[in-house]
Image (cartoon, rainbow, N blue to C red):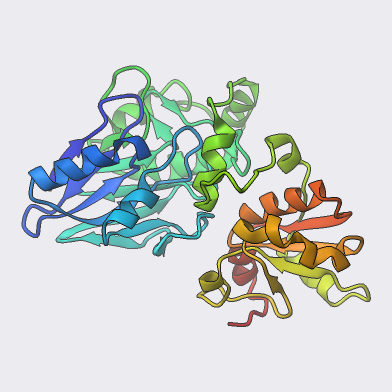
Amino acid sequence: MLFRELNRGKCKTYLVACEHTRRAALIDPVKGCAERYLAVLAYDGLRLDAIIDTHTHADHPTGSFLLKDLTDARLIMHRRAPVPVATEHVEDGDTIQVGALALQVLYTPGHTPDSMSLYVEDRVFTGDVLLIGGTGRADFAGGDSGQQYDAITQKLFTLPDPTLVYPAHDYRGNTSSTIGQERRQNPRIAGRTRQQYVALMASLNFPLPDKIQEVLQPNQTAIDDDKTKFPDLTQLNKVRQLSADEVSVRLISAQRPFLLDVREPQEYSGELGHIADSTLVPLRELADRARELQAHKAGPTIVVCRSGVRSTTAAAILEGLGFEQVYNLQGGMVDWNDRRLPVER
């Protein structure tokens, strides 16, 4: 295996490649460094086969979308990732093949709902779930410190002690650690019960990353233009959420809600399908086509997407336009399918 860290800063991007086939993967690329990555690949005679984001980033624009457009590489994320342009979705226990290298997917949520780690040979890439001498924050929307504790202690800490740990960020100048060292010495989690860890994380008062609005929502939607005006975090946090089961009940009630699906057309008819009688208006077109929905302005509207993220944005936009009873399908079509509720394709 060929291996390099490419950013040499607080934010980490890793290159792993098969020495025999010269096929390579980039893990957590940063948009501003895309030219550097392509230059390194060309210099080393490597072909970019896979681009992998371990989670949806909130502190920097992902380089995955640009690299996908510039190459024929696969863009791979966890199945709970909200972004519509991923070409492959993976789940716990799946394997990502890059030449002769096999990267094992470990689902490690808690920092975000779509967080995963990648275990290959003697090392594990932990994203922002487990850091060197710390753990990632769990206070973003969809974060869960209890899930994070379980992911670290029941997945990552069961790997062999000598396993090298490479996180997506480090703020102290470290390059790597080991599972054994983190299990014994990590001051955030070592020796703590689940309850103690949850209490500790709740007591921390992290500042929000700079320009989180300008970064997070384009990373979630793959929309990065001046035309789409995203709601702020306060508006998003006010959106009313309904579970898949709650939506299913409402669909057979006397006052059936209007279903608005804001995914891309290929998603609407893709692997997850869509809910019968839902109307497709992609999020990027919503502001221009809102007048088409005026008949539903007073009645109940439920907004749907892949994992409940883009639809939360769409629901906040509709509320800002005066729609009175707007709800979001929490967990989106991923949860709907997991509950084995009916779909059309």
